[in-house]
Length: 364
View 1 (cartoon, rainbow, N blue to C red):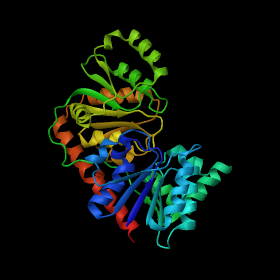
View 2: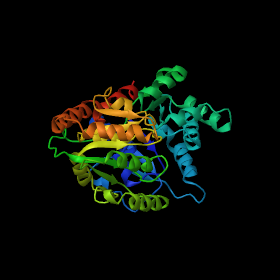
View 3: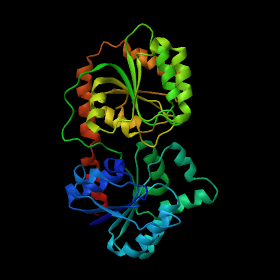
């Protein structure tokens, strides 16, 4: 099988996310010839040498107008050699790639659309305008469609039937995490200060729960420039918290980031909207108790019916703050709980069994 992922915005970091891990595991575990095709967006892609060794990268010839046009030319020229063409998102480029592939592919070829869809994206699918029409035509052109959460897979199956699969995002690890050193830390990881991530809600909720305890808040990730005045104003009004709130900046070293996950007792993703939230898996894999919102539909799949997490409404500061207080006052054995959470993530959300399920469908 020749499996081609056409993703023109590829950066090195994507190779350890679904864009790279799905074709890599297909190659490593199932003997698939996997190729990721993209414009060259970075000078070097170091993960290709070790972390996803054996995965092939092909770079499109630079086009003066748009890399999408280069992608269309690639599909036109190579469609007959491709057994599975994998594209991402409901957008114009996916529509055009799948349309050209359908016209040029061999009879057994399959177009695989990975949606990376959130609740807002689901609503946009049914808009009664040209954009909605393109989205629905893209769904029709795809032979296999996967979505990352059960709530959206159930909704989409009503309309599109068996070609819709529930394929969650996963994480990759050689063995389940075991060595925990849990501290009174609440952790978040992401693009801090963007509207979707609701970092403002998190800071206010922590301030509401911080009295009478020694818990700390660690925030990992780049900070949006227009959010920095909010931070300065917040910290000036909460000087008592200046030693308990720590902005680390972005951490690219995976082992260093894993160490922070392993130290935290609680991981919070307060987002107003997410298609999945891969950081939830990274946190669970390292034994963190999860708190997220109804704007993150994957939360309901990962938190194991409330055993390993809480879900609150977006922007509900009292509810989020109350969840912190409840856990701060918990008498639970945090290391024992961490092992249980990590084992659950290992058995249910590793890339290997997830990709095996996908391979079975693609190979029919």
